[in-house]
Length: 145
Image (cartoon, rainbow, N blue to C red):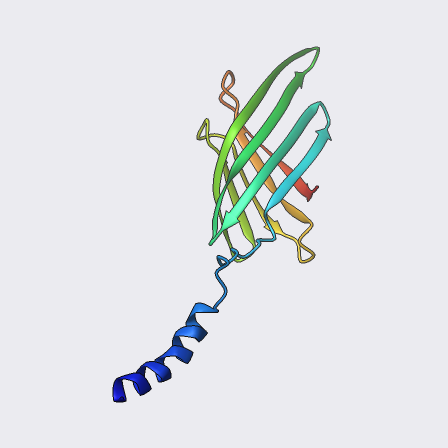
């Protein structure tokens, strides 16, 4: 008889646990997740950048498309060079600071700060141009699409 009483007492506990939510916990939706882009024309130079960011626990992954056209004019002569980098991105996000590496080279990088309203990231994009070996940097603001 005691066994039946114990079983009857255990049934409500088993019932409570079996009625719990079976849905997986959704990961926190980061303010960075999404597509960010900009275009800058500064003098003779052009920068176009689009990144699709997925951020989780401070780690950034995704894809990017970075195009930089740089022209140097000296007197009556000029030289120009362009750099295109399409592919995967990696990076970090900590304390509002976003750091992105365009993975196909070690040269193409972006570092900026996420705005308070979470709609823009202002910072610097930099690369080393292959032919001239010049490092160029541009102040850009990525806008969330």
